[in-house]
Image (cartoon, rainbow, N blue to C red; front, side):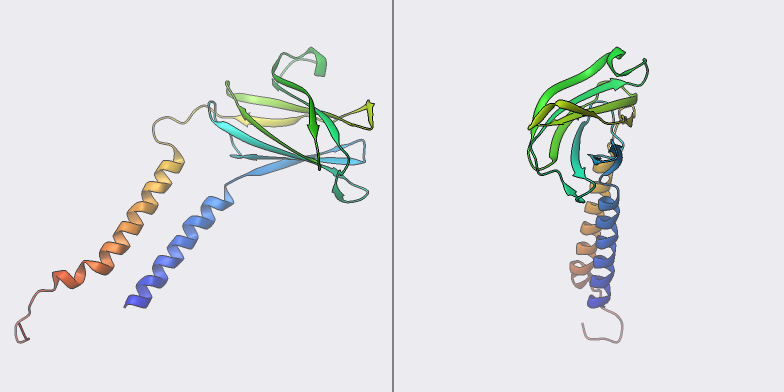
Length: 185
């Protein structure tokens, strides 16, 4: 009885943890000049207005199939979808000349408006800053803020209820044994 309950508890725990990990983050890729690849990952995958989003951009040399090892100078711009041309948009966020070492850029950002947003990355090698590579834009669909309870709070509540239920199921029954007729009292 004890081992069967423990097995069920472990299986439910694994399913809950695996489900949370599966929806943790995601990303997109853009090829730049046929030579370089930018991977843009974000967590959460579908951001909501007012929630901080963790962006991770990795710059890959496609010929070497490795992260760019040279130092980079990166510019990041975020705009609402719309407008014509890169330079004619109204940008909500602009950060110029970010020094990137090892081909990885971490960028936290909080969206203030819902809707489709474009993220632009321009980069140059520190050894040749005049040659600027412009990546195609990344589109991000920012949702309205969640009303009331947040999904994480609900999942934590469900998980907490399951844990309390299992603990109660294992430890409380020995104290609730009732005497039966014909048995020792």
